[in-house]
Image 1 (spheres, rainbow, N blue to C red):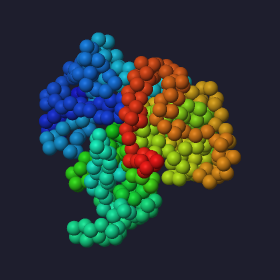
Image 2: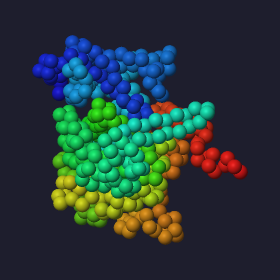
Image 3: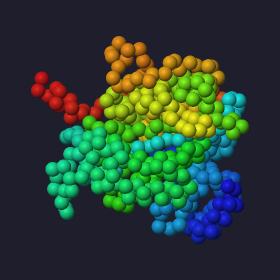
Image 4: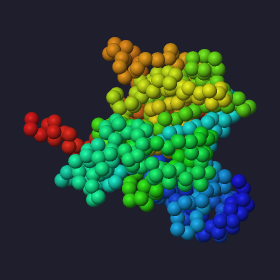
Length: 469
């Protein structure tokens, strides 16, 4: 879409405001809004200035000016604003050069897409994330000198079976690990998910499925059709925006936090991936699971660099409370056809055109731009260097004897371990200038602040373990 087409869209829909959006290094989306008449040719040539020093991990106050450059192809109508508003996703540029800012996640995604073609391996990378989330009735937390706590309220939760509710307690709710695919009234959120899906379709996404997930207390999933890297990163941000706002206007609260409740499954974001060249799916072949040698090398690259990838795909301290055995979280770096205990699954498909792999350890709290780019760069490194992923594992990896389990590599068990792995294993990311050392160093520094804050916080469990000793 051109700038002229954006202006035509503004006229056709009587748009009153244009909302420029961008994502920071932590995955948080920001916006600034202008009257629609500001969407002239100059907007798409010169962009809009903003204060980069107010964004975590970006500029100092002495060099704070930055440029938001809107992408006309990303234009969608905002389904929530009272005044008709057009959303435009932006790349962040350096004002002195008008080149992409090295710490802009969306620009990293653009460079990753360019690297696919420059490598000669493929033309296009396709990504299909499956973000899971919880919808709660109410949530409260406190973290003070006098104490720390959090509390979740959910009429659908297993722990609410003995609570009194206005209008009575229906008794219909999923138990712990009992939430997968039940019909209503056990699944109480079907209509709300349907509302989310209709809005996503109106925003141009193709919804393929929605359903209740395994955990109690309102765990859900909405699946949308795959897309190219940057477009899917845009769509993932839009999906989060829709989910959280629909929940909000229904008097609920939604979170993509990987492990908000204790004792049940966490929320992951399995990422389906494939590469095409000249319209041909490079992952289709006649080897294990219907894969090609190219696909196996791609898996090998992801396994080799998985712990560095974790710094982006599992980017919070809370992420590693999900990545533990016993809750359907794939912690072992193995691949298998249809086996959901493996960290890389080869889904069954009827057509070679649909052949793909599914990497199952990511979660949804960072931006798709960084997670998809890291996965892609690792996979391309595997192809270019012919990295063997080893033999497939078709057995239940959750039930291996200890001696066999020890021989299988795993993902990281903490954020600081992932950041250390990223610091040591970064060459595959900086190939072709996709990620920069400047970005990686700044990202590690920013994320280590979270690690330090978490380490310094006294936890109620420590009172249970140590108070009376």
